[in-house]
Figure 1: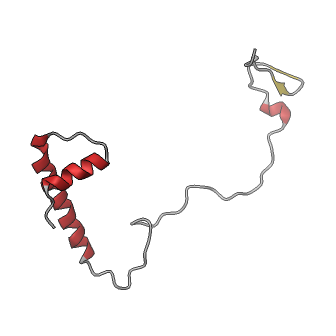
Figure 2: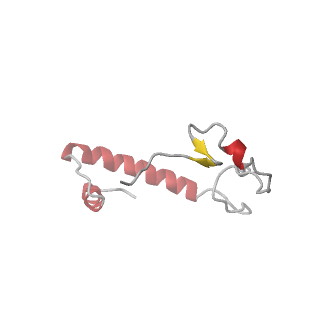
Figure 3: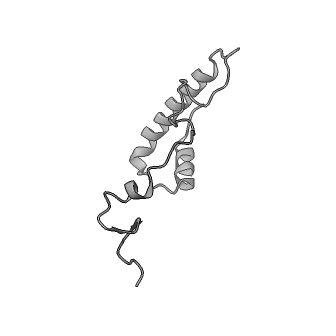
Length: 95
């Protein structure tokens, strides 16, 4: 499939991009190469290959949701700049 300068202009218009006239030919050639590569990929034999969303398998980065004990109110406020009766004291935000 050969991309024409008119098609590049149309795509640039749809994408709201300004493309110099001098760059049209270069961009058309680059799009041609991309489409050729996609054609190459489309010809690959994928018979028996399971569809996937990513190329490699990896475990989730999230840990198991296991309930654990809490630190306690006194420990939670131990390093706070200011606390009173187990509560954080913060500056007033809304006047």
